[in-house]
Every structure is written in C-alpha cells, then in structure tokens.
Image: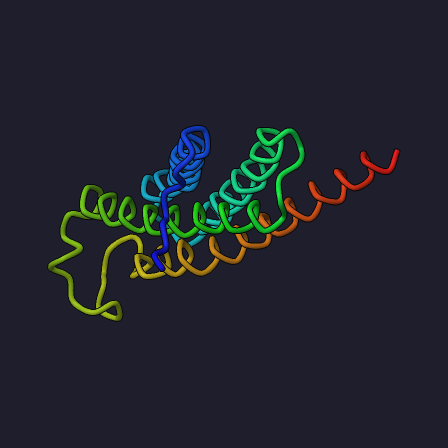
Length: 160
C-alpha cells in the first residue's frame, strides 16, 4: 500500500498546487516585513502571517467542496487539505531558509543564539517554531472547521 501526496485528479492537483503556493506566499509576505523591520516589537507580523495562512486553508476547503458540487465527502475534504497543509509547512520552511540566507547571509556562520548580537537577537529559531507548530495548529483547525461547516450546510440543503 502506497501513500500518495499529490492527488491524481487534474483539477484536484491544480487546487493542491495553487493552495500550497498561496499559503506559502501569504505567510512569507509578513515575514519579509519582519526582516525589513527586524525588532522584537514587530513579532506580531508572524501572527498576521499565521492568520493569512489559516484563511487560505479555510478557503481551500470551501473551494474544494464547491468543485465537487457541494457534495464532497468529509473524509476527502479533511485528508486532501491536511496533505496540502503538510506540504505547505515544509515549503514554508524551505522558503524561510532561503529568506534567512538572503537577508541574514551570515546565519550559517553565527555562534549559538545566546551570543547573537544583531537586530533580531536570535529570533531566527522563532521563525521556524512559528512556521511549523503555529501554522500546523491554525491550519488543522481551519481545515476541520471548514470541512464540518461545509458538510453541515450540505445536510441542511438536502433536507429542504
């Protein structure tokens, strides 16, 4: 038994790629602003990115349900979007590494975090923690809530 990450259906594959790209871009735009204004007081920009990431995941579930004529199976909605979530989080970590190398090109030559003397004072690790843990929690919550909401609306439409 093999597990495939990328869906086989063409329209679902397109949704997979578009959603992953949108999720990565919407999270990384506030991160770019954080790099430009790299102070601890601007850490709230990461949470703006998390909110945008969750919104993209929520919209993805609703769009997938509409693609299936509002008759998508709950398990399919959740499983597809959790795959999108996992791939998006990995892609965000790759993009964060590239952004760190571009904006803080000495990141690979630095001493441990307690000896960092630049403007960020060792906030680089917080970027990865936020990208992995917070995005996964917010994305999972958005996927489950949107799937259950879409399925509940479908049940009401059938009963009328």
